[in-house]
Length: 184
Image 1 (cartoon, rainbow, N blue to C red):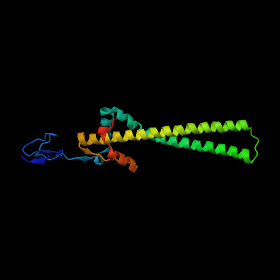
Image 2 (cartoon, rainbow, N blue to C red; image 1 turned 90 degrees about the vertical axis):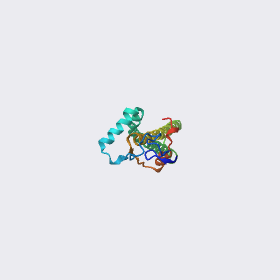
Image 3 (cartoon, helix red, strand yellow; image 1 turned 45 degrees about the vertical axis):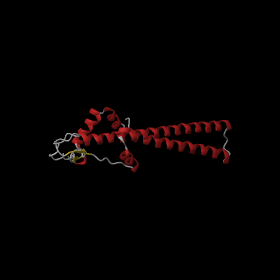
Image 4 (cartoon, rainbow, N blue to C red; image 1 turned 180 degrees about the vertical axis):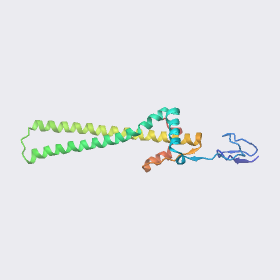
C-alpha cells in the first residue's frame, strides 16, 4: 500500500481509496478551479461580503461599519494635537508678554491661566493616548475580520482573496496572524 497526495487538500492518503478521507474529494476527479476575488464583479463582491459580514458573522459586520470611525479617530487625534499646540502657543505668548514687555498682568491670574492650560494639556494628552489605543485595537480587530473573511472565501467558496494594506506593519501582522489563537 502506497501513499499518494490528495489533489484537493494536499494530505497523504492510501492509493487504493477512491475518496479522500480528509476532504471528501474524489481522487480521479479534477481539483476545483479557484476563482480570484479581483476577477469577480462588484455585485458578486458585495453579495459575498454581505453574506459573511452580516448574515454569518454579525459581529464582523459591526467592524466594517467601524472603518469610517478609524478615519474619525485619526482626525480627532490630529485635532487634539493641534489644540495642544495652540494652548502651548497662547501660554508662551502670555509668558513672553509678562516677562519681556512688562505687560500689566496680575500674578495670581497668570498662575491660574498656566494651571488651567496645564490641566487642559494633560487632558488632551490622555485623550490622544486613549484614541491611539482604540485605533490600535480597531485596526487589529479589522485585520482579524479580514483574515477570517479570507479563510471563509478559500474554504467555503473556493475563491482566492489577497487583501492589500497601506503599511508593511499591517501586512506582516496579517501574514503572521494565527486564527486559532485569537479570541475575536
